[in-house]
Length: 420
Image 1 (cartoon, rainbow, N blue to C red):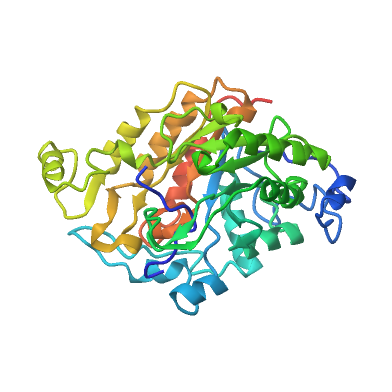
Image 2: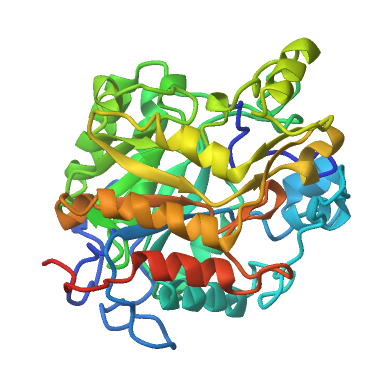
């Protein structure tokens, strides 16, 4: 949004377990809690992709973060001008140094509108063909108000596409800054016990869907900023108790460390940590506003010589690989970073994220997970379609399908068959 809200999370620099059989209704207690039953039964067979070859035999459970901001909404119309979507900033980005590729433009899927079911089906088919188990849709809940909800609501109501999914709650206020400036709040995130219960009642409808991703037969729910919760332990206890009261399995709660680097989220009552990427804070000088420090990093060869903060992908990959936590966690993996579309000349760019480098790094990560049980062999791929951050798997005009092909090659079973 020519300074559009950052609903996908205002980044301060910082599974398939779907059920089998027919689901004719959400468990009885759900209706008592205020949730609506589905308009028609959804069977497991209906939850299969509508077209495309059989899924690859894969070595890990790749779940791609999915941004739903590719359609106009009244809030963006009011704040940024009628018709504003994620594509607005993407299309007008300009290069800020020699050799810089901007704007980043889509290829096969075009400038899609997520109100169209055909666009959502085409995304799901591409993901399924290239070994992506499912999408983690970013979910925006503000004390009962949902924003950017239409694409997921239609996926849930229609039963299409059949690609599995889970939800990630982007629990932070929306502001006019893409880097979390809280001085210009547009939509404030607030918390209460009553809201947690209401939230659980809404979530139960999604958790009951046979496509919903699970770990140990429990629906996976990710919270982006656990430390923002006034009392995280109370939140996790209330959410679990309300979901089980509604007759569903206890959710498998995942806390992201995007803004809490090195934190084991079990201390907050979560089941496990998602070690989020990119961890921009590990890049030398990334968080500094000092030109002297920036110059020192450039002279040391840790940063490229440009006004914007520009790093090499291979360096960033090495630095981030070195700080993976030793406590239990689910891995994250980023496939690029360039927020020029949002920040202009003040952007941070991780240059040179080629399909070859992205695929090689992912292959190493997946190799490191092979001693884990299948349910825990999760990698949150960042991202499926974060175009304004230069972080996407969808085909573009530079690499075409090569990024998806590299991901598929890294994840495909090479010798032994996939474990049970």
